[in-house]
Image (tube, rainbow, N blue to C red; front, side, top):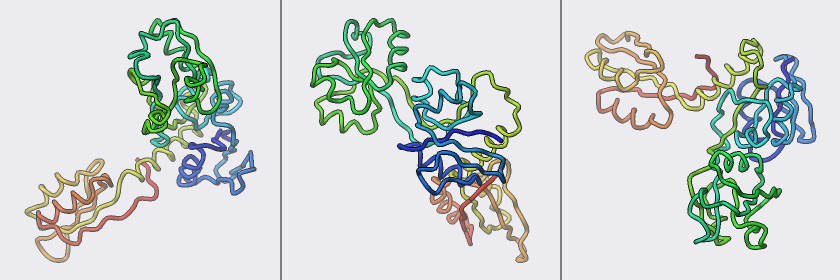
Length: 282
């Protein structure tokens, strides 16, 4: 069986399980369940702390896993990213009190508090900065107020929490993170079970981004209509019983569907319909 690590809690957990369910895999009904066997799909799921997943996968104990890019890089494990999953996006940045520093190049001799000591240490080394790193679990905003550090490095979404603590974001982002699929570095790339898993996950990603659009249009306007709805390869165009009209079917980006419908209507298209895509293979 393919052995897969899945986050058991936190912001990664529910979206990961939802995506796996959409991909056709069984998922646990009880949060206390730590191992789930999906015999029909020949997969065994292990529900682990998100921070530990890269360690298990990098050691070869598990075949693949879902975790955050930030957690993968912070772990220092022998694992690598093989697919982006498009959820749990975040930006990892430095913050401090106004006037303390403007850029990472000014951090020399200072102390940085963070929950991602490995990631920050590497970033400082890459920039040639000699600074101390203090590892803290949980919220790090109070580290400056309590005199533990002059700088903090943390995940930033809106920045509201930092501003409320009297801090400002400085410098360029250390990292832009999201949920990713990982495997052990150097693992065979032609594993058929892994390839099948990735195809299923890719199918979910495409199904979430696109809708199927159907419409009727006069033959003389087909080329202009097809230019609006080119599809992934080419749309399906079928003659209608009413002479001079054809039916067109094409995948279009869901975010642009309403605009495309308006433009098709202005072009003379009628009976314009969109339907959701639940699964696909490209």
